[in-house]
Image (cartoon, helix red, strand yellow):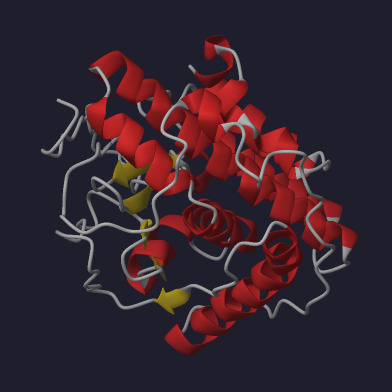
Length: 299
């Protein structure tokens, strides 16, 4: 059901432990609102066959910035995408990834510094607000977007209502371990949703999705999520150009977007990887225009 009630879909769960590379990394769920939403990054801990959990929009009842663009065609005209802007090369010093709460938070916060430096010139150039997202690594997070997803439902998520990226430490460590590219890929995707929020794309897509027929709403959801993959990829390329990340690091982070299962709300495995790599290939934000892409490219 698309609209005001959440829906979760599950795949069978086995009993044997699998390696990190076998985990579905970017099963990205959406807890939307009529206008604002909570965006989930669900990477399920692997026990045999991967378990997929997907969320679809439901109302939490508060309006955010509205956009006049309420169709995919109109969203494609958003100033983030037309004519397109190059994401600035990010010069920052990423610390080593540690396992303590302080070390992990330091890694994420420096990642946000990098992300802010990369995206601020773009947002200023198109006249959008520049607001750094807040960060929470609390193991039992409490977001303002409604019911907080459990660990079995999501690894990390973004709440538009409080402009916060939630990266629960224990969840991330159990799923991502000590893989810095994995952790940064999660953070970059969630920041992609933050960029969508600041530019009005989230509110426009949520409004359209809320009023669309189910098949159309699912496609809008996929266009939103695949764009966040691409925006995350643009940042990874910007950090590589700025010397913050090595090419091997970026390649591993990008490849992780393909460690997933196909999803009717988030796209096929092929497309999830393809849009992330479209971002890491460089270019401008116009490269991330999922809204005018052919349906086959957002399946």
